[in-house]
Image (tube, rainbow, N blue to C red; front, side, top):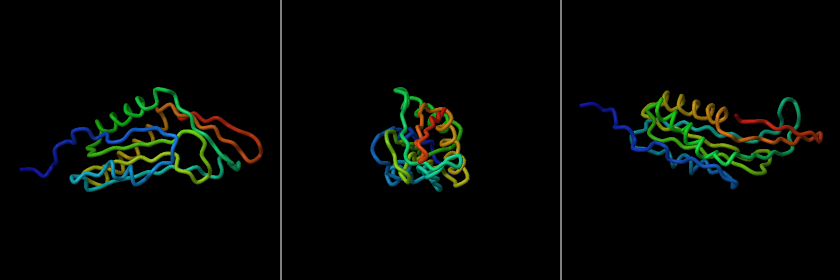
Length: 148
């Protein structure tokens, strides 16, 4: 007999892009699993500077396929790591300095796997999911940054 738990039926528990404030508690609850010994969480916030320029505000916009692409990224992470639960929520619309922009989490049988899966999830989300950031600087300038 082995203590390796059966794979989760569907480890993708939450995949959403929304214009309302994000909840860390919602993401943590989504990945909860009694077979998970580790949960890793990443929270991305709007910072007050970028490239030595003061950021006043920013907005995120997304392609209509954004949630399908997000699910694709989650599926690839689920195929590569022994995840029990995965969740990713990204904000769109106007955000202020300090607002939560993205929250992702992974639960796995062990902490090392959870850390690795969470890191892959946020890195691949930033590289592959069609979300764009429009930064407005205090000096009156602005900049578009593509997430993919």
